[in-house]
Image (tube, rainbow, N blue to C red):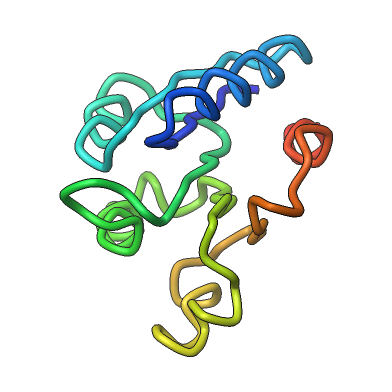
Length: 120
């Protein structure tokens, strides 16, 4: 499966990418919203794993951008964040429905196996 991994933490990015690649996925990594958009101009993935806390542009801004393009509307998006889901719901309302979020994983409790499962 083609995966776009948007993760600003270089150590986590490498850890997640290695695990996903070891299970047969093709992974492209980005550290920022702008890098993610640049990668999307090159190739459209089947799934995006993304952190919401990004430098310059937030993950919410990236979600607005992603969902504004019709050809990107059906990509499965998995939020993999240090921000608890409840906090996001309080701040942005039902953003999961608004942005058609496939899954929300809270980093402290998310495992690498859970990421790999979502690519099957």
